[in-house]
Image (cartoon, rainbow, N blue to C red):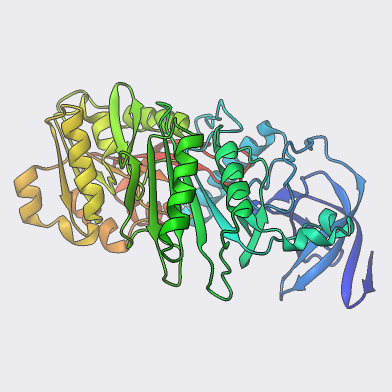
Length: 471
C-alpha cells in the first residue's frame, strides 16, 4: 500500500525484484510503476520513500527493512552508502556476477536483436577488493557530513577539510575517506598522511564553488611491479607550500617511483591539457604482463585492474585464434597494450589511435619490448581506413577493436564492413553500445562467441568480449 508523508509517497512492503542500471535496484509500486532504489539487494522487502517522480517511474530510498535477501552480505567499508563507488558491496559476489552476465545478455538481445551463441561463463575477479591500480581523490575545504556524523552533533566536524570522493550527483561535495578498499596499500596511508600534514600546516584545501584554495586533487597509480606514482594537482602556485608538501611525501614514502605535480587554475580538474611537472623519480611507472613491460605516465590510459586486464587480453587473443600468419589491425589501441600482447602470435599488428601522446607511448613500449612486428599510427578511426592505408599495410585477417564507452562511430562500423576481415574481436566496457554496433554488422558478421569479464568487483560495471566471423 502507499501513503503520503510531507509530499512524499511511501510504499510499504515492497519486494526488490532485480538489479538495474548504474548499480541501483529495481522494484515495482502497487500500480505498476518502476521504483529505482539504491543500497538494497534483490530479495529485500522494504518500505520505500519516493524522492523523485517521473512519468513512468519513481526514484526512492529504503526507510525500513522488513526482511533481508539471502544474497545480502555486510559491507566491509565504513563509507558504504555515502560513497557512490562500490554500490554492490552489500551483495554476495556470485550474485554480482549473475547480474552482470544478465545485463550483457539483455543488452545484446534487446538492443542488438541478434542471434547469440551460448555465453561462455563470466570470468570473475580473483581479487574482489584492493584491485584498482589508479585512484583519484578530491580536496575540499568543507567535508560532506554523513547522516551518522550529523547525528553525532559534533560541530567541529563541519570545519574539517576532506580528501576523498565526490558525492554522487554533487560536483562540489567531497566525502572524506579514511579507508578505501579499492587500491592496495600504501594508497590509504599516502592519502591520509597528505591530508593530516596539509591540515597541520594550514594549507588551503580547494573550494570548488568559490574556485579558491591550494590543494585540488590527488592521483595515486600503482603497478603490478610494485612501482608507485603520486601526482598532486595545485590550483595555484605557492612554491614554499608546494615544496613543503612534496618533500614531506617523498621523505615519508621513499618507495614512491614517480612524484609529480601540476598547477591547474582552469575551471575543471582534467589533466590532459596540462603541463605536468616531475618533482622526484621518473615520469612513469612500469607495468608488466607476460614479460612485456609498459610505461604508464600520468596521462596514460591503462586498464585499472591489472590482474583482470591480463585475463581480458588472454581471452581477446584466444578469440582471435592467431596462428602466426595473420595481419591484425588493433583499433583504439591506446598505448598499444593489446597490440603488443597479441603480436607474438601474429605476422604483423597495426595499431591505430586518435591520441598522439598514446601512440608515442605505444612506440616507446614496443621498442622497450623489442617488438618489431607492430606499427602504430595516429588517426581518426572513421577516416584512417582508406584504400591507400589498406594497400600500404595489407588486408587484415583479424580486427581487434576496444572503443570507449560510446562505442564505435557509425562511419567506423561502415569502414569495418567495407574492409571485410574474416574475424572481428570486439572488446567493450559498455555492452549497450556494443549491442548497437553488433546490430549494424549483423548482416555481414555472425556473433560466434561471447564472454563477459568482471573488471570491477563491488560495482555494476562489466567488460564483454565478442567474436564476430564473416557469414
